[in-house]
Length: 500
Ligand SMILES: Nc1ncnc2c1ncn2[C@@H]1O[C@H](COP(=O)(O)OP(=O)(O)O)[C@@H](O)[C@H]1O
Ligand SMILES: [Mg+2]
Ligand SMILES: [Zn+2]
Image (cartoon, rainbow, N blue to C red; front, side, top):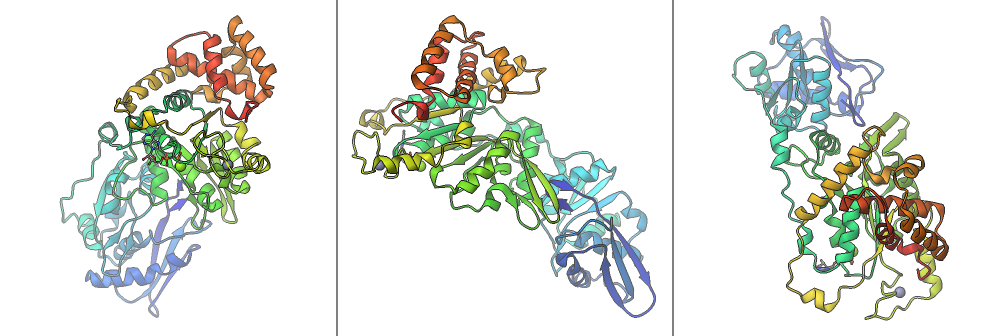
């Protein structure tokens, strides 16, 4: 069973005794588990596997773990059959079975088949029976034979050795290679060269981004395409994403997440939806964006409590959900992209529309995103309304694949540089490493000095400029940070500029 992202194996013990017919499940069963006995009974009956009416006690071990969900049905049914000598006890040794039973004996899909398969293999089991719909996903885990069964009948026939069902085999690496079938591409976005460049820098250094611009400028379009220029998922990353989607029940018909996820929660989403929680505890949007992108559109509309709740997990790359039943942690290593209008009406600074907002209203609006979260957005850019010329131009824009190639090369440089430092990208640079790796040359230093005076950059903003300048240099393959790199990084401090 699942407890957050952790799968626990539960042993099903059956004791059959004389006396009045009775059927009890013990071992801290939740209500769905207690109802299991009705589903199991009906399924057995409908598969012509009725067991003798005796006094049956089913114990789910370990006793201290609260058992939730309907996924024990299949295991309980098989254990009952073995206790009733309709199945050879030996056929069940080293076997893990997971699945909910329908009354007619069908085995219904479960959530979390992949982490369950991994836990089963890790504990030294040889065979795993899962609902047919989950077989490919479970087989990704490797280390044991996975059999997908569509019904209780099929499971019994398999364990009796009556069918020659082959274990499911999946070539995860091949799935991953053939996987990028994304229909989004930066080639679809006209103009907006500066914004695309900023997003390329963001992708190259794993920097969080804020885009500010009027409605219709293409902010949402630009943000949704960020995953298409990030480096391809490694196999481990893909399995981590798959696990998260699996336990959230979001895999659908696919057996593996092969592209970096983009999660775009609406600003009306609850804190539980964003952070995680519920019963059983499920990952929230920030964990579903693990190894991908979390897109917060209309940033100022998000309740402050939500933004506040996001701050720490973004920094620590893990989200901890504390509930009465325990503490659950989910990895949450996501890149954040935010978008907002420049003012409540959306037209401040737009030459084609007059802005009807009072200065006070504009200030309040922008103030909603100031502070701790804003501090973590290394790159802040303005995305202006698209000029007519760009809107109608037939010039082909650069495809995502070409941008991704440059991003990949820049990431490789960072990995090599930080190989022994425990970080992967410039966005993760702490102050000590910043000092070591982001010192600009004399011209860069002079430019930075005058900018700090002119823009009154905070120490935090100063550090962000240096990190981003490092990434700009990595994109061009330069070792040192010069005035050109500093100048570009300074452009990405939109909200620090006096005009803002
Ligand atoms: N640069 C662009 N290139 C092509 N289409 C665009 C561009 N900008 C906006 N559009 C069109 O306008 C629509 C609205 O863009 P959107 O990304 O939602 O803007 P925003 O989020 O800034 O309000 C898009 O669906 C797209 O059809
Ligand atoms: Mg939008
Ligand atoms: Zn306005």
